[in-house]
Length: 193
Image (cartoon, one colour):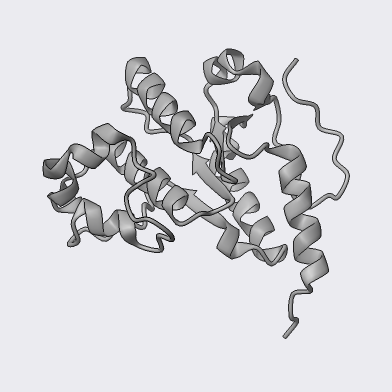
């Protein structure tokens, strides 16, 4: 059994920080066929880098949401610091939403819960395997606006793997046209021009 060396974990964290700026949302273009494979590879890179506690996952099919708990209880799993303070005011005030069983969540609502659970857990990277296909563009824009407001001033970064070219085109300063390697200490991958 090999123990992770703090220097190796720090090197991995430094590399991730050079790729994805804290307090921002980054978009990484991957083909629809390789979305699951890239998500698994990125997850494995955190395991190999000794940084699993720095990662929160957002996945439409494997949500990690406990269905018999309330939405509020699911949000508080692994939270650190002031409980619901990082939620946007609109969500904090929506007690009907927070107190409902998590089994009633729509795919879009599940996305919010997974994202904010990662943010409240002070995870350095919140990695999403795409966004729910059922979300219309206005829902996607609203979610990204909520996410960006919540990320501002934090050390967390939201990385969305996506096959949606329109997201890449709409966010050229925070997009990658191909998935950068998380394993390489020096990666020449260029961001979208």
